[in-house]
Structures are given as C-alpha cells and as structure tokens.
Amino acid sequence: MMNNVQLKPFVKWAGGKGQLLETIRKKYPDKLGVNITKYAEPFVGGGAVLFDILSKYNLKYVYISDINSELINTYKVIKNNVDELILNLSTIENQYLNLNSDDRKPYYYEKRERFNELVGNNCSCDVEKAVLFIFLNKTCFNGLYRVNRKGQFNVPMGSYKKPLICDTENLRNISVALKNVTIVCGDYKKSEEFIDNDTFVYLDPPYRPLTETAKFTAYSENVFDDNSQIELAEYVKVLNKKGAKIIVSNSDPKNENENDNFFDDLYREYKINRVQATRMINSNADLRGKINELMIVNY
Image (cartoon, rainbow, N blue to C red; front, top):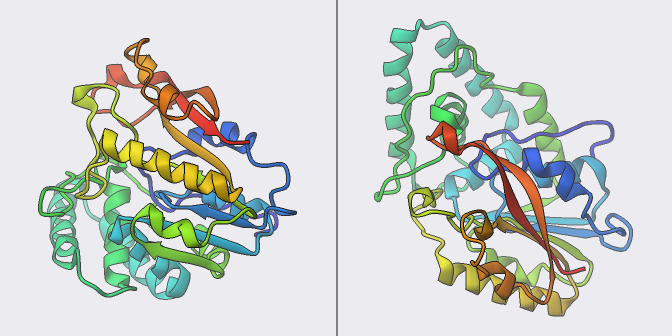
C-alpha cells in the first residue's frame, strides 16, 4: 500500500474507469485487505481500479494481465526500469514541447514509425518501446490506442498544446507500488491458477458495442465478439465456484434497445447494477454523454 499517495493511470485508455471509480469503489468487498488478501485484474488496461486498490489496501498478492503486449511491456518497464524510462521520456518531452506546431507533426510521425518498427519484438522489458508508447498516448488524437490489421499503431497526432508527457512523480510511485505485482501478457484465462476464495477479481473486458458503428474493439488485433462475451461469462462461473469475489463491467445494451437482454440473461444468477457513466471517447461529439453501464457483482 502507498500510504497517502494517490496513484493514477500513466496512460489514457479507451474504456478507462477513472470517471466510474467512485461507483466501483463502493462495491469493493467489505473484507478487502483483511480476509481478502489477493487482487486480480485480467483486463488491466489503464489500471484505474488497480491503482486505486494499490493506493488504499495492503494486499499479499496482486496479479494483472492484458493481451496488449505493448501495454504490458510498459507496465514491466515502469516496474523494473523506471529511472531509465523517466530519463528518456523527459528528453522526448523537452524536444516535443520546444517545437512549434508545424515541426511537431513530423516529429510525432517519426516516433510513431519507430514505435511500429519495435511492435511485436519479443524483448520482455523494452525501455525504448515503453517511452514511445507513453509519448504517443499523450500526444495522439484523443489518447486512443488503435492498431491496423498488421498490428501497427495508426492513430494520428492530437492537438494538445502542452501535454504532460513525463509525470515523473506518478511514474516513480507506480514503480514502487508494482514491486510485488505479477504482470502477465496474455489471455484472461491465465489468471485462473492465481484466483482462489481469498481473491477479489475485477473484469473489465472490451465492451459489447452498442451500435454497429461503435465497434471499436481494436485495442489489439483480436476481436472480442458476442461469443467471447459468452466465454467470459463461463469463466466467471468457474471463478464464482472457487469463492472469489467478482465484479464485471460492460456496456448496457438497453441504452439502444430496451428489449436486448443479452447480459441480463448471461449473468442472471448475479446482481446486475446499472450505473451512470459518461462516454468520453467518441469521434462524434453528439454521442458523448451520460449512458448506463453494467456492473455485475457475485456477492
């Protein structure tokens, strides 16, 4: 636990839980940090819930994973090589902020090209790739992470005038907090061995799209379709039998179609809470605003 230190995500992430955090926090298990001594987040993404828990609770074991290898590489670099990361990231920040808007564009695309040269390499702790990952996230359009069919990052440059690219204090605090955290690149099912009846599990998969045009699932090359959602619900049954305390987040299809009972049927044996959220990342400004999301709880 980081006493009196509020950790925050080091990247902006589509579907990030920063603005829903207070609602999720109210649903944490009562005995978290006492009888419940383990935490697992198998779709860690930007880690808003992870960092909230690391800030507030003493836990014996924490497990995080994601299928996005570039994201997981960055977590590992922050954990193991934070000084080198900060040194290189602050250099890039100074270079970028000292450029005028015309010169920033070629600089951004040069860094994006270099990042894509490094994508997919097998180095488990690549500092240069982590530096570029954070830089691109802080300077690209809307903080999106999107890849093409080849797995290459293809988001254009954003128009932030003075982005905070290297948040030194937060990165150092995160590095300390991650020291005893197991960080895994891979499918959520890899967490099964870790999870038992002493574990709180937060599952935040790619959301089921509410409309055909909202099918933004390209956090990686993999697509999380309805069959994947059904498979995840089966996995929740496995964890529920183990006695784990579980929260699952997802979109609420009833925002678009009152008769769509996809998740109500899928998770009918658990408590299904509808909570109000703000949809922030949407290219159409008219589609940003208050909607319901689902928070499914087994306790």
